[in-house]
Image 1: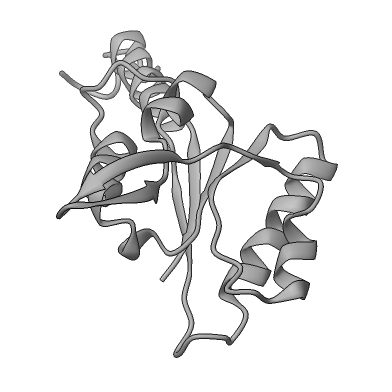
Image 2: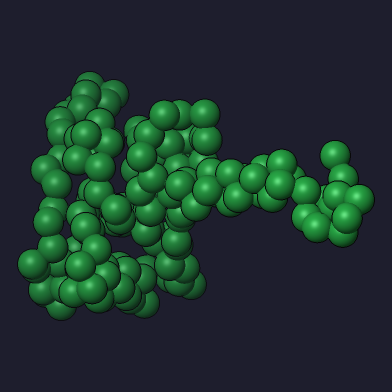
Length: 147
């Protein structure tokens, strides 16, 4: 299909296809990752600081999982943010606390923080699929994490 008609004006069908494609891209969640060279350099702290700014701007932000590693300053940054409860998961004969991905999907936040995404082994692949799979009929949520 041509981008313009014989009279030089844009083809309305082509314009509609472009707008619909932009709408589909805009409706998908985005992934923002805070990188750091080593543990303790402030990735989680920076992620929580960004989340607090978003919340102050009226954005629906939740913490899917956060690991403070006993750092008081990091725990203080999480204060005031909605932290979703973890769920118990059986793993190799032990019970571990894991991020509740189904709970996050039910909650449908605009932004969800997932601390140490690479370490949440049971759900990391499922989270990536939810973020990037445009075939899933889910509302868009942006995901913020660190590695």
